[in-house]
Length: 104
Image (tube, rainbow, N blue to C red; front, top):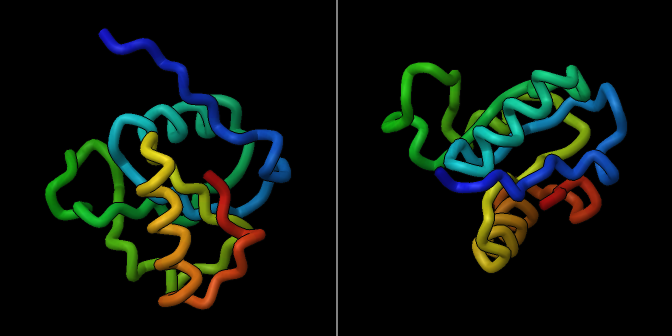
C-alpha cells in the first residue's frame, strides 16, 4: 500500500472557503477525504479531465463545469508539479483565472 504523504494545503486556503477540487486520482481522493473529514472548506465541484471514466462512488464533473460555479480557489490535486504548472497555465488562459486563486 502506498503511503499517504499528501496533505491538503490548509495554509493556503482560508477555512470555509468555496473551492474547486481539480483532480480525482490518488492525490485528489486523499484531499477529498481530508477536506470532508475535517469539514474544512466547501467543495463546490470536483473536476477531472477523465470524469466519465471515474468510479461512480465519487461525484466528479468535467472541467468545463468550472464556468458554472462560484468559488474562491481551485486546488490542483496532482502529484506531478510539471502537470500542475500546465494546468495552472490552462486555467489562466482558458478560464481567465488569476494565479492567486490557483493552489497546488
